[in-house]
Image (cartoon, rainbow, N blue to C red; front, side, top):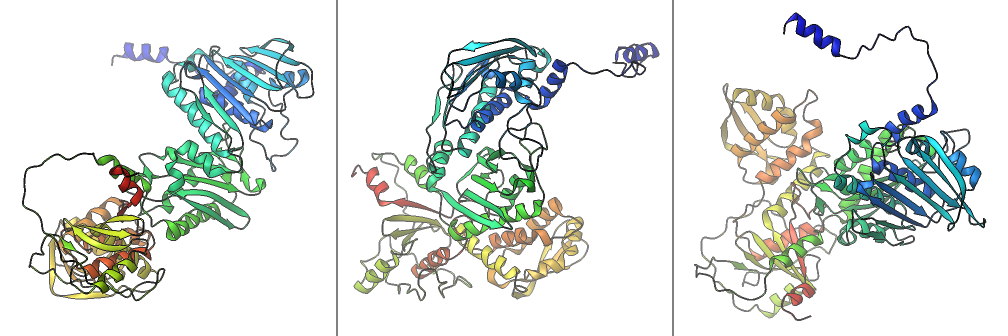
Length: 626
């Protein structure tokens, strides 16, 4: 660039220091409010949040929200709360005037408290507030435009308050350029209403307007789960696990979805602190940590968490939008969330999501269409003459049967159908059907176990299920002692790049704790001398290569101590019953019994479901029998 061009560019830039010698002066009230509005009212959804919070603080049991133009043209919030008189209205549109706190921020028990929302909105929009107290014969109305009060006059109206915001940001047109499309802004308001609805199930919410279809959440009283079902869908009720835990006067309640009931984003995670909806990074991080190794990458759990604690132990004044909070003891809160969710998943999270059966039903089509004939693949039936599996432990106790050292299947093909079972075999199968996962009846495509329960059928992915069982066994052993290993008669030599060898050898001791013994074998090779005994036959080549790739991605100076469970999950995948492996009836039943007593067995280490349950009523509906 020429010197002339450079001087022209510099001269066109704002000259920030040219007013250095000017005297300091007090900003006008309107300008102060507009500056505050830049933090408090970022978009129409921010204004909706503030107005709904005011209605809730006023004790409203019915709140109606109407929008037009995504809230930019119109945002109206009507409530049946306590209302305001003329003197209250005059103060309400002035900055830092509030009825919710007095002299301290250590005991905030309301949603609003800063006294900035209404004056901030009035400074950038056309604001009108009509209100009437329940004990007053008439109401009043005040109007503010661009920060100036237009009028205050008597007005007719029902008890409660109606706040109407028109032409948002007309006084600061530059802000309009940063807003998204009307559809996106309308969706953001919908999300605000959903969060408020979950937090206050005793309040009826109605969201309507020409830019949207009407959305209504009838009040459910104290039935929080019913309100959650309204917002998150009725399937959440069937896939939610109740949470109730407490540590050092911090209480956590709510519901966490089973791992297989997951979504493609984190929009279905709701958190509340003393009734206040928040989007706190600490809480969201704790939810991710609680579901680690149970949900696939790119998928997110569904959860609704409510934290209650002394207001003095949490700072809600971190940001004017009040969506962030700071806990005095963040480690305590995170530990409480992670521990409570993991305990709930271990207790009740092994069941498969009901959505799996729903998807299966949708996949079926009534009627029959002839398909080209193809050779029939052999399958093994659990009612074969082989001795049926006799469980030696009751439900809730770990059976003695194990999958360690599974024998290879016989090369002899089984007939397509087996003879009818003997009476004693039928009785044993009927007894097994009373277990949650039932009695194995068949193995199809040498990968899926079909089991019969008292009220339906269960289809199990044998590889995914056994992978989870092996992982849980390895994880349990990690916290007790070094895992037992088996010495290979001939070490497995794996050729990999030299830099991958360096990474693996740097963590040889940590791998040894898992029963995997490796040594350097030249500059570009690793010798595998021992593998975890519980894995049986291991694909050492694939395991070493995958571990090398994973270490390259997340290796840190602190080593693998924080990732040992992740490594265990990888090993479990390489040492589980493979797809295509034919199982005997007793092996299939042993797998089902182990799944019933293993935490998290409803999904594999990658978060995919290990089984799908189909109720008899669903099957009968497919055939028009109900």
